[in-house]
Image (cartoon, rainbow, N blue to C red; front, side, top):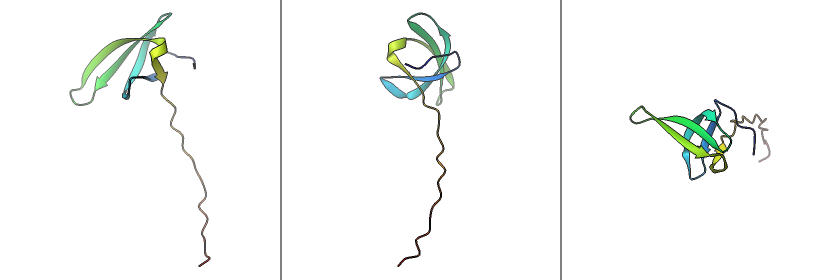
Length: 71
């Protein structure tokens, strides 16, 4: 598992649609917060380190598109 740090964006493996922000890390637990978009309510949750996964950094792929002039 990659190194977790305070401020990292993670998601719980059972629901990857909610992004959580790490506030504190203990030996086996991670304390996180998130904001529910619809109500702007802040939620706090504690997860086991084994039940979370770090969000991947967005990658931008730049490629050159070639023109095909052959008919």
